Image (cartoon, rainbow, N blue to C red; front, top):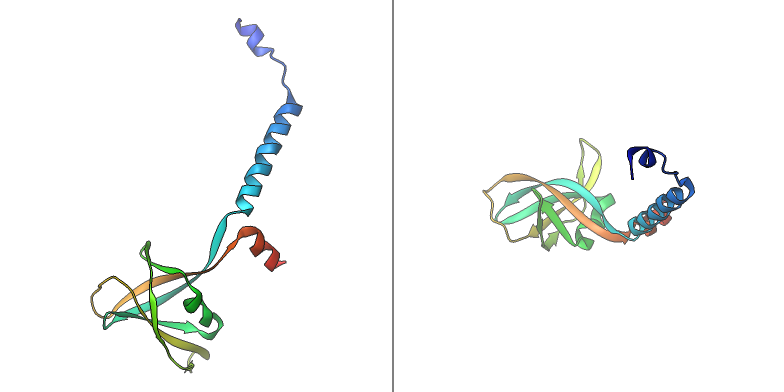
Length: 132
């Protein structure tokens, strides 16, 4: 084969289009079957070897239904020790509950950390159905 024949190779656009569409459909179906979590981000304070989280009433079930949480990109299993009665923040007019959680990391006392709580694991397809 020479250079001229390589330049004049016929372009099979229909076959290329079918291959691209097939790959797109396979990727789309695989993305719909991926299981994802809902995430709630909050801050917590570390006191007496426990984390104290203030969870708004809108998200009160997140901590009890959560599978794990992350602090600084590290995944931790946890146990809910106590949940307070409904408290009111008069400045922001928000009802919240104070949740005390134990987990297996030791930190300096009174450290404030950013916590991401992962809960409600579902497939992407189910989440889209719930939105519609």
